[in-house]
Amino acid sequence: MTDPLVPPEETPPVEGSTAEPHEERADGGIWEHPRFWLYLIVLGAVIVAAFFIARIFSL
Image 1 (cartoon, rainbow, N blue to C red):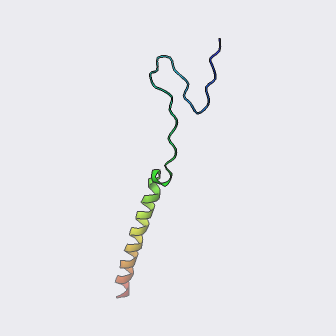
Image 2: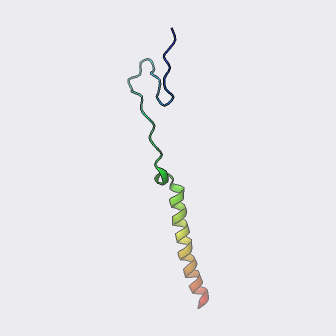
Image 3: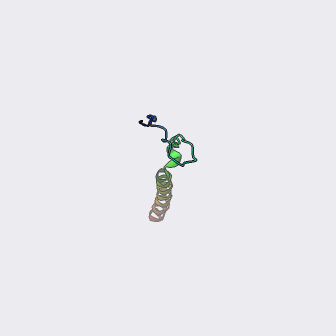
C-alpha cells in the first residue's frame, strides 16, 4: 500500500515524531535585512564626517 500524498507546504508525518506540521513564517521584509540598516548608519556617519572635514579645510 502506498503512502498518501502530502501537500508541498506541509511537513510529511514521520514515524515516532511528536511534532505537528507547521507553516513557514512569512518574510519580515526590511526588518530581517540588517545590512540595509548598517548601510544607512554608515552612510550617515560618512556624511557627518564629510561635513566636519569640509569645515576644517574651509578655515
